[in-house]
Length: 137
Image 1 (cartoon, rainbow, N blue to C red):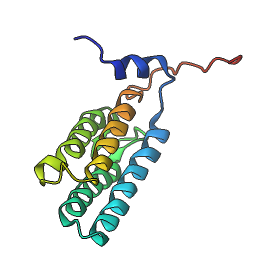
Image 2: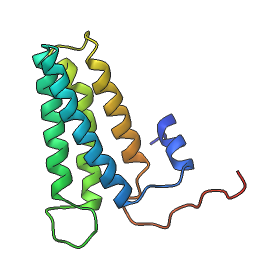
Image 3: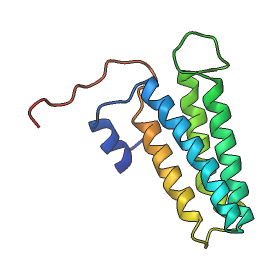
Image 4: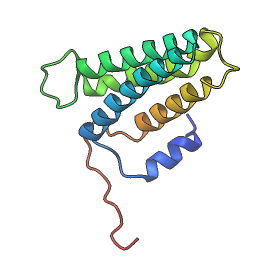
């Protein structure tokens, strides 16, 4: 399978570990929930619902993921990569599903989906040794 441009960029970068990934997951969940409140205050109930669904789903998956690899939670960190892909796809399709794809609020969902996709590609789900950043650059 050929690599996409996003994958080519991500493979050249240092991989993020589980702690950084978890922080971004919770931040994205919070961003969706905050966006839902903003969209609701702007009377775009469809965008508010979409943001609430994405935020709640992301938060639930984050809470249930075993980022530390201790086996104490329901979703293993390597399995989280598959769920993460689904969450990014859900965010990308939400404006179309809820019929607000031509409205300004749809841009937030596209940006969040792109960020989630990049984050998934740039994450070391297997715990392999990370590439070090160049010291003289």
